[in-house]
Image (cartoon, rainbow, N blue to C red):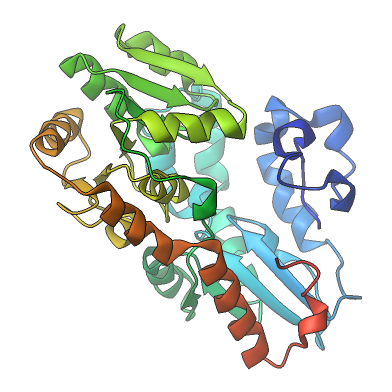
Length: 338
């Protein structure tokens, strides 16, 4: 496994660090400073030489699809979105706390990143999108076709729960484009308890606008997050997601989801059945959705049954079928796929 940086303590319970190869800057520049190296990532990944491999599967949110592979190899790239910094920079920067120099630098390098993103999108032999939403972006921005395989959700990790301690829950990296400010503002306006799990550059700004009913926990061990899912009133997706694994995890616990009616949520949340969709990316529209959910009687078991459609075994079977259709022998990937 190859990547840029690895936060081993955070992912040790899900990933064996001894299998991961990072770049040489891992030691001195790991941690919060990795964002400042954005202009270097295209160079690192586009020169990462994997030509000795017969099969390469890249998981790409921006750069990994650009790795060098042999003409005889099969390179399948799982695309979570075309590069957000290039194609959705305005949304990425809107309401963010990035200083003016960083904003200016991002706008200056955007045209180059967009060109690089489109050119390197030709490198993989096969593209797989993590949602219909992303497949549409790939077709529009790259002019290529992709198959959809939804991300894996370990639904067995979550037990059906009818306990409701009344709080709303959101678990996410605290980035501006995820629009957590809408959830904070709506909960503050309604005086509703909201638990925000995760860290990121927007935490200080979000805390500054949060009322007393909003609690920030930072990063939590997986077991504690699972427990929060089991006791929440509903899970909130305030911004447009490419897919949204956490929302499906909430549904696997039998919990409804309140989500913006855009992106991946439109493929996972059934309005009025497994949750509520709201149309406008505003705190007022979200507040109305929260109150609408309170007026509904939803069946927790039906919500969980819906989540099972996105179970990890469905994911693995889809990947096995895809690789087999391209003539890949099972022994090439059996040890890496559960």
